Length: 447
Image 1: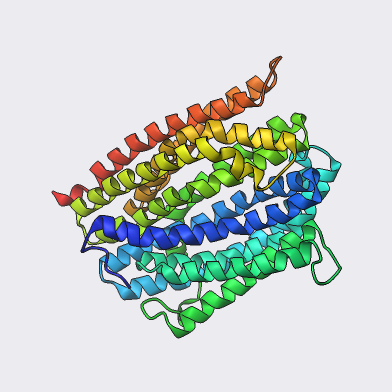
Image 2: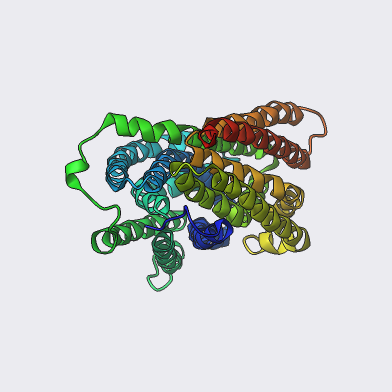
């Protein structure tokens, strides 16, 4: 356990954000590795796996319901110096993870084909995406256990073990991807099915490795089978904080699905280009997301310790750090954006779409960073409902105009990117207003 209620706030944020950024980059590399090798199979396979990858956001939404609540409650318990409460929350999060994993497995396998049929540009794209999901969904279901264990460590101020485990899993994926996708060394290529299987096997390895860490090295929170009997009160506490955060990611999934639906008429190459551009953007977002994730335990422990000034200081430091990082990344994408897209596709149409997307969207990177900062603060304060209200404003202001534009004569795909840019800016303004209101009300104990 690391006490975050003392010492430099900026130092704590940087010390936690750096390994978390590496860990999240490693997680993103799962899909990047798949995209890299699948792109060698052609634009249709790339479009199918890209669209299927958006399904990951739906599962991510469910894991966030678990992870965000676990981080916030354990951070509060650590700040209040209540180890017993922290252990109970951790063990109940494991039970909740098992239940959610089973639901994700059954639901994912059942919905894979209907989902791809609704978004795929053609039959071949639908088939490729469905096959990929059938092999990848078991790995997605197992991620609930990894999220529960990693979130508990983050709540106690420890992030390096999770990062190292994630790094190990990506190395496994990198080794398995060419063997299973292209048949390197075996002569039996599995194509897109191999991409899904490689990721699933890597998650299995990572889950086992993180469980081993808990049994051998972790002391503050640990496995207690006597605490595995479901306790609905604790589940309700976790979900009260986690449900809105999960809903935020679910709205993001809906937003992405609408874009795939709108651009379906432009063909599989356009969907492939957008898919690559979106993944590159998510990779670029990682430093700001890591800062946002670091805010939750740092401010959360100080909230549990009733130190209002350090909570406010954490928000200020996080907003400045995130904005500086995202401004730098904006310039990088404006300068070399085509290189990032070209690393994953040589198809001229896909390259043009992906490059155009990144050129427009990169101008609101700073606003996106502020949204992540506010989300981390909502988690720390134990009330994540404002985050979903902020995300809902973006969805509403985007979906209705986007569907209207798509039906107009002369509709161009670039119009979708400019509309997205506008709605993200609005979301950032709403988030900043809401977080100020939350700090005024929930930090009233300072008086």
